[in-house]
Length: 538
Image 1 (cartoon, helix red, strand yellow):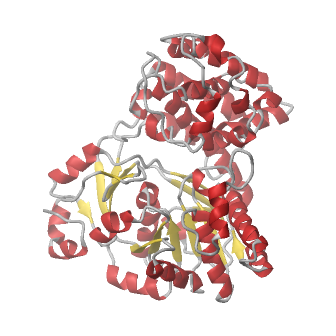
Image 2 (cartoon, one colour; image 1 turned 180 degrees about the horizontal axis):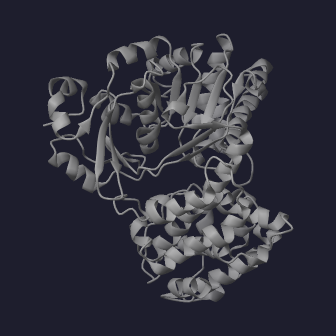
Image 3 (tube, helix red, strand yellow; image 1 turned 180 degrees about the vertical axis):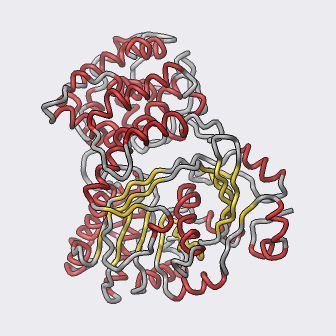
């Protein structure tokens, strides 16, 4: 059997090659030692996106001779994954690229030199992280932790009670990743205040700005409590010391596929079981992903940076990143994903690719992209919007080998709507050449999301609504709304549609709420109303 361990790689090198598995083309021990001596890149979040993309980027740089160090991965909370998914495999990752023609390209990623849990209760682990952050050689801390990981505030705009309790505990926060990162930055400040770039690679608008807002808010709250001095707050706000570049990342990395697991077992691998953590994360020793990938970063790195452009990353100005990000996150991919997620759950689909074979759903996302979204897109120059969205709709979403599900995409939707639809709505409101009254499909998706929150599909059968931090409050607003009785919906959407935290705009003030309410009532008419209403407005 082939095992994902360094000893097995050395002892059975030829067996891996016979199985068609590409191995790292560098001395992993030497890279590990160099990284521990002078770390350059730390990454927070060890999920599928990191394994499929960031770790692969680091490997490409090492293999082309551009750098001699790897990436140190930090586990924000799921500490059991440090041993079960990384140390038991010597920090190796099995990356499987699923091509549209059915081919699987498999390689071992060996660029992750250490995996450390950000556990303030584990003195050894926390001291190791503090030591790394104190090193002047550190240039970049990247993050891929999902949108909800940045939020310190509740729906009322105030700091959430559990966050306030952590702040009261000082520089040993127990749970929130923003507080842990801020505490580690204080360590860097106190040990010489070396420069650093903090790069969010999460999928939302102005991610760098939101990261800075969270970190500086935490620091300011600690300043009020007397935990840190004003000098630390000033350090974080000094662009020559600490930068928060904007970025746009795009690589679909669904949950591990059972089909891929079976294939890996057939070619001789052991230990490829798919696991679910107590927190609900679905992981495996392998990661499956699509072939397409994009990463565009604002080139602001006060302590220098790895030459990631040699691995295909675009570095450019803030203005261009903003245009690319808006193109992708607000129009050409993410809103389409959310539309498919919501309607897919309501219509009983379990595959994004299968949804693209549904004429109504294909027409829906094509209409959102080309008719309602494209008028607000500015061509960023480095990536053509028309080429990008065509690839999304004709190659990437329909790829039958990508085991992505609407249920996965529907996770945390309340955290995504403001970016994926709110920004476009604001442009329709504010631009003289656009008319918000002309929007049909975007408000239909918002209405369908409200219908989705009831947890009943188009046949009236119950389904499990995907996790969402605002789900209890949202469902409370919809209490008493009944399928088949549209009159029960009267006035129930107001707390939701007026919430700027959800939509980045008050939909009543934007002139869209009444339309959403009308669509919602139509979607509630009875069994089959979702399909009927969808067809009516296409």
